[in-house]
Image (cartoon, rainbow, N blue to C red; front, side):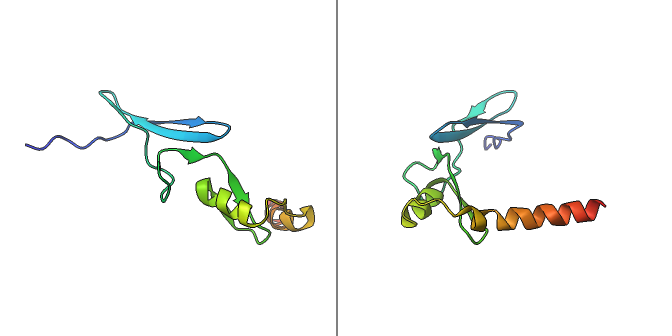
Length: 97
């Protein structure tokens, strides 16, 4: 007889300043930190970073840190970084009128 598969009933997220973790539990047991950032030495440790490029794309974790470094760790000029959020907000306001 095979042991039953772990079925989570609740998830817990530890949002840290540098790193974050995701855990799962049910009434009878807990599970070790879950793998959430593939392609890094320890995928259970999620780098607490989001990177938005000037074209509206978003990356998270180690990939976000890599892309930010590739861009010379420069902030996106406000005129470029806000263009997508402004257009979405305008569409939402227009849809609610």
